[in-house]
Amino acid sequence: MSAISLPKLPAIASSPIAVEVLNGLTEHPKTLSPWLFYDEAGSRLFEAITELQEYYVTRTERQILAEHADEIVSAAAGGRDLSIIELGAGTATKTGLLLNAAVGLQGSVTYYPIDVSETALEEARTRLEAELPEVTVEPIVADYTEGMRQNGAGRAGRRLVLYIGSSIGNFSPADAVEVLRGVRGQLLPGDCLLLGTDMVKDTKLLLAAYDDAAGVTARFNMNMLVRINRELDANFNPQMFRHQARWNEQHSRIEMHLESLLAQRVAIRALDMQVRFSLGETIHTENSYKFTDERVVASLTRAGFRLRQQWSDAKKWFTVFLAAAS
Ligand code: AVJ
Image 1 (cartoon, rainbow, N blue to C red):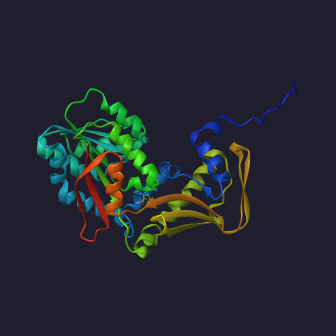
Image 2 (cartoon, protein in one colour):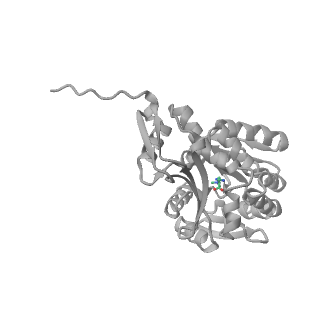
Image 3 (tube, rainbow, N blue to C red):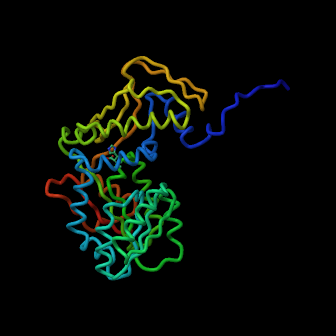
């Protein structure tokens, strides 16, 4: 047998980020997955985005929840004891509105925020327990499916799962149905899902929301390169890339890209890899799908839910759907 010497890569090369970067940057066109946005700096930048004038998403949904929280929570409870679970809770800044309504309805409530970020969950717990002592916070550090499974054991009463913020918008239509099916699989008939989705609207408004004047979204997008530099010992020069937001009419989605401003080569040393970019070539970093009522209802139905009620703002920019496991 001849001795084959395998190139030695550091252990980091099999980490989730290494696998993502290796696969994504050898694809054509190049892609990187949106979960890479959310390191500590990226999570802070996202919080800043939610406060931007152009980013109507968060404040519009908050306004809908503020107006209809009592109605939402009593419809979901149906006269039984309700617990609330949140997928991708982050720091849970909009959830207080619903928890407060649940406390008004039944005196106390247990809240299970599920997120992969332990620091975000601890921040949520500290803030919510100070603001609302009648809320018991039980953080679950896990991805959605695993978190739902952990939460399912030995429970009584009704469950309301929150999947708000249009987070579902990161998934292709087919994957979104799979995600919803996964949630449905962990519920009993009568349990509810509250799904928040950003709706199709004027293209100029959509583009502004993903390319704000202060450049916060640009920094959020670019942070992916900064993160790869740090975690995979790469030498991306962020100044040699430009943030780009596009509306893809055919797929009804905003796309974010990082466009190479010149022909260049980047070294990713932890992967022992060189990546070539041509002038104007992009890395596709995010899809943010925009919805219609019909599309959301069709996806919910295919996933095993039945629509109960829906609420929107006056301009129909954002909609919150309450659906029951059928
Ligand atoms: C967290 C996926 C809902 O798509 O609007 C915000 C992320 N990206 N600005 C969105 C995001 C750029 C956000 N979601």
